[in-house]
Image (tube, rainbow, N blue to C red; front, side, top):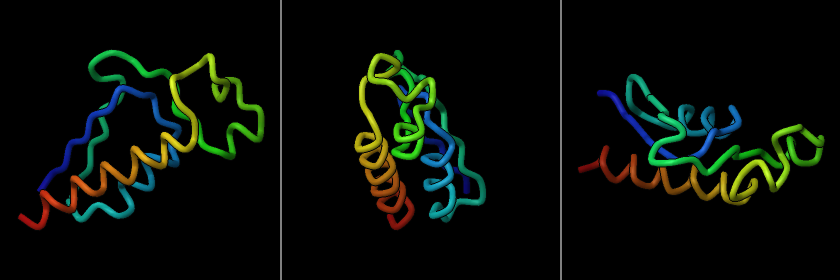
Length: 83
């Protein structure tokens, strides 16, 4: 089985890795910048390190939004998987 997840952000890789690591599907595809753009979605580590795309002006939310996106994506995935 395949799993496709869309979001309006450009994810820093660790968010995508967290989704893929717990996805039971054989393949997981994360489609970014869908339905407009939310800009970059940096991790806490990127913000603390001063990464050039981790500033508020580069996106609409920060690391907490990324954690929420991962949690909600995985909630949906597991509900779909178990139905």
